[in-house]
Image 1 (tube, rainbow over the protein chains, first blue to last red):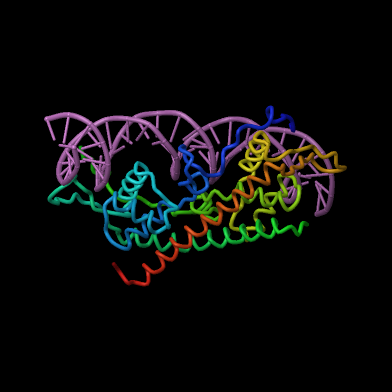
Image 2: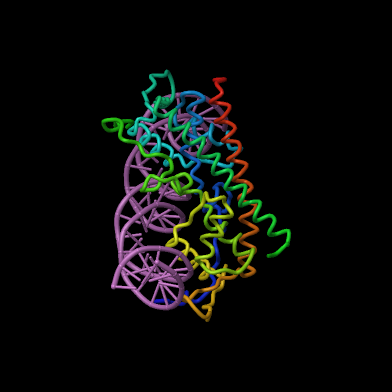
Length: 141
Length: 141
DNA sequence: TCACATATATGTCTTATACATATAGTGTCC
DNA sequence: GGACACTATATGTATAAGACATATATGTGA
């Protein structure tokens, strides 16, 4: 019907990233779909427990991806249900109990799929960045 | 409490991408947070109406980002409310009515912010891909 | 008349993400 | 021994993006 005017204009405007405390910990409002592949890559390197994975992922991405621990554990649970990882409680000596996760064959297959995927996404991202950079250099139209 | 075993194991397993029809149109289950920056970049190049933007974005990303039209129009509306774009109906001759969008100064500022952001994300993605590739080459631990 | 392309728009369900919070063990510093 | 910090796993919940279906209107060509 082609109607409707947008409401009465401008607001504070959130940034495209930014956590609640004002720090920039997330990638594009946190959404870059990097958590699952990062987790799989970390686990392909070595079996690990959840808390380790948080730091492994942070390190692998140069500090740019700092997973939410809640989300990470939920993701691990989901991946286990889907047969991508298996887990077992460690009967270690000291400290709180820890669950150790390892990739299954299916998990390795999924990782391989993700790798192709990330390459495609990087290409798309590169093209976008180039388009945007050319733009700001000023040769319009 | 540390309890709970995940349910009775494996399921069909969705891919990390794939649309409902089996085609691969999305990036990582569609979530790459590329739509907003792609739209801003396209609009920085030239004012345009929504339908054009779909194709411009597709072209800019080498066909890897095919925006959902519904989401795109909703995004445009949101951006207008936030003062990032302005729009006006075109009184063109033939065809259905079209709304033309252009970036505001605030929009250009947001784009600049996005550009820094995309660069960070690309670096994170590169590190991830490198970590995963090294991994599959087999030098474990 | 019917299909198709252009063009804008809404309805709605699912999922990820973000953030807060709960819990428990272990060490340390005063 | 109490306060605190760190390790470790987990749940509750609100929001927002995304995916898909569908509605609408105009115009073209078979």
